[in-house]
Amino acid sequence: MTMEKKKGIITILAVFSVAIVLTTIFVVQGLTSFSVEYQPLEGCVYPWRPHYTVNDTEATFFVQNMEEWNDYFIIPDTYSPINYTENPYALPEWMPDFDNYSYAILDWGMKPTGGYSIEFQSVTYKSGAIEFRYVKHVPEGTVTMALTFPNSIIQIPKSQFADHEITGYRFILIE
Image (cartoon, rainbow, N blue to C red; front, side, top):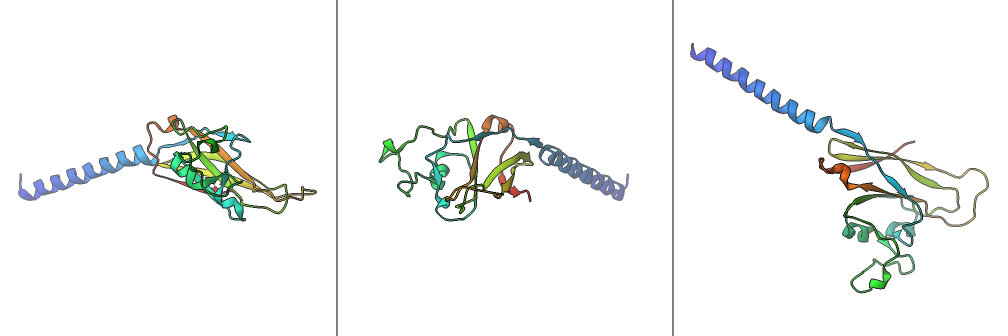
């Protein structure tokens, strides 16, 4: 066999090997997609309030541990971050369970009347990232004349991701 034929065969084998590796990466990571199960939390998370609801700023968060939770939440009577080591009596009745769950939060900020709402429509895992789709509803007709803070919080069992790495997340508003 000539040297030229050997180089040609080696080149073909190298290209074939790279194609196999890239295909494997694509199949393992690129095609991994599934619908994520979640549970809405209604009422049980109070008196927790996000820091950002003291004005009309919209905020979205994916929280995986207590440190992140404390970065985002306050008890509204104090409007200061909670410090459990200094004041263990500040603990509310309900506490997030970060051993078993992660939490996603939608907060629309302060609104001038009742009738506003914000809610999750779907949660999907795609190629390492969690995608949260949500909708907003504006009031129609007669509403309560009071400041409101529409929000939605869901808990997501961590067991769903035992074989999958979470590399990011994004929130998508469905218009």
